Image (cartoon, rainbow, N blue to C red):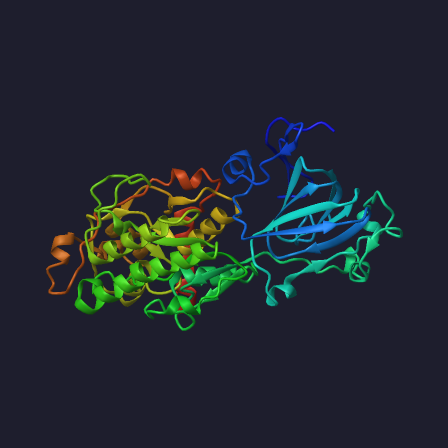
Length: 478
């Protein structure tokens, strides 16, 4: 048998099922191999799956056959002694459901088996030692997520080297259902915190067509509660999307508001990030333009944070807690518009009431519609985009709040000249507690676009949003 000279990772006909060629270093005493070497294997293309347990199966007789079992975790299988015929069947929902792959394996190969792919093997030599790493500890509850398919199902067309009639097979494995009756292994769930907020409501709509999304409102999980993380069981989850935040920017400058902002936006996020890291769950944290001072004309992900007020400072602290752990995302956005109270809905209401508002004209940026933002975040996860910081905003030329207010008035059938421009300084002299705001909230979004995400037109989204508000108030837009 020839052995590979270097480590190599190859794709198979089943998405995510990878064959690893392992160099064997031999001399007159025997051989040595690096059966699992994280740094080298990840560099070669293997998932950084971080196993938690190593199991070993000794099989004394040739023809011992086990499987086909699909567990709710990833596995990395190898042969320590002897030889096997391995067989795998994709039991994940989707176009690859039912796809098979087979391989004769000795000590010079290993296979990475992703969650939901059924695994089986048949020993081709006596005293075969079969080893596998897993990414999750077995529990009684996890048993319900298992799926099975019959080794002898003719639809699979698996050519077992030793006939199953003469092989050693357990009765349980002989009784497993055929592929037509096999239970698909559902993907891991994605938790969305803050489902009652503007972004959370956008995820609620996506959840109607995406069963992975599990929504948590403040009633379910309140980040103001000091022990909230003890109520969050992340078993069976791949990601947490933190759309919850204390966003009352002006109130954050008060004594009570300051404490709340730091608890929700910083302290709770630190605990959440630590728990996600402990349970190997990726955290997606939504942040804000307020982590910058607004002195830059266009801000990319590499700019240093420099928050002006308490809200921005608390969000910046939360970002750092998230980024302290690998594989997490921070998605910064600005000027959010979604279902609920926001600048555009306020201007639409004032236009309907005939109010002449004063609107600042020296703060510049772009609107971010939650329907597009929620799609964008799911694209990051589903496309396997690299972890780290991403900036997300609407498209088009940057505009001031005053410019946007005029457009809202015009599209709502009111005179845009009714909107009166004012400066940030003048607006802040009305006796209220007003937090400092960045004068420039224009993001460079090239990194997000490079992931392949296609933004919808900001003008199109604004028109749809105003139409929705008009329908809710039974008033037509222009």
